[in-house]
Image (cartoon, rainbow, N blue to C red; front, side, top):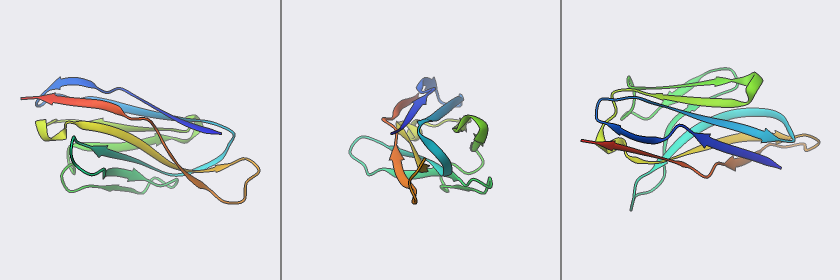
Amino acid sequence: QVRLVESGGGLVQAGGSLRLSCAASGSIDTVNAMYWYRQAPGKQRNLVAGITSGDTTTYADSVKGRFTISRDNAKNTVYLQMNSLKPEDTAVYYCNAIVRVAGRPFPNNYWGRGTQVTVSS
């Protein structure tokens, strides 16, 4: 009923930038908080950044000052601007959103399929 589709990943040299997007679609009533997670090979999935419906943001310490999360509520889309990228930022980046489906009383947690970000040294 709800689909999250990420885009914007790719290969970039260290010090470069990428902008990820994640669009939510389907029978959406409201989109609450939206998040970006990442998972490197052999490691657990970790929170990178989050943003509430009121635009309160949170960041992992490792990306503070380099990454910026934002959202367009009219488009049900969240963005992650990634600057000064480092090889250790290499991972699959996943979008996560808390969404209330139309006609349902409570929100549910949804995930995208991920987009690969590779930073070469």
